[in-house]
Amino acid sequence: DLRYRSLVDSISDMVQSVGVDGKLLFANPAWFKTLGYQTEDLGNLTLWDVIDQEDHSYCRRTIDDLAAGVEIGAVAVKFIANGGKQVPVEGRASASFAEGELSATHWFFQDISERKAAEEKLLQSARLSAIGQAMTGLVHESRNALARSQAGLKLLSRDVEGSERSLRLIDEVLEAQQ
Image 1 (cartoon, one colour):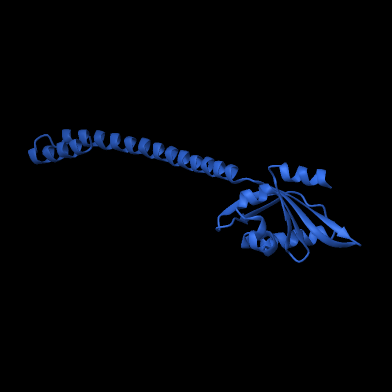
Image 2 (cartoon, one colour; image 1 turned 120 degrees about the vertical axis):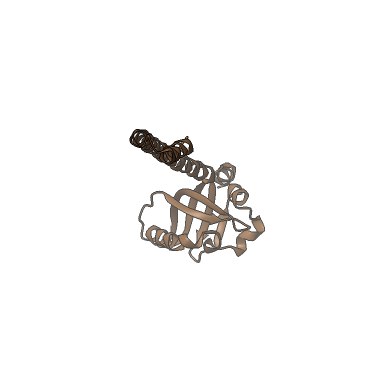
């Protein structure tokens, strides 16, 4: 048992065990470091204190599935760190049974904050690229329209050669377009 405890304490993944009443029974050092809680906080915390409110129903369904013996795939939730900061995580969950009844759930998570930030930057970059492409298209179309307008004004100036006022207005419009 000491070997397993040493192993769990030394990994960088966050590990927590939760009783059937929702109380946190165990958390490894990576869990405390990532979330900013102290070891003495553990006895006063429940799963519902450290999981974002919007993920509560998802976690309840996951616990129900674990209790029913369903193997759970990837789990993705947001923790609430000490101080209120959201910490996105993903990982796996398993269950322990005593006399056929659920006795605890065990959760193994990786902090994916950096990956989420990188994904958001990539998405922002893609959005800016799309805006840039749209603006390039608009500039191109505007230049085409401007060229057509200038050509039309030059043709019009031939028709009004005798009218100084009309030619002056055409020249003013052509200069304004430069």
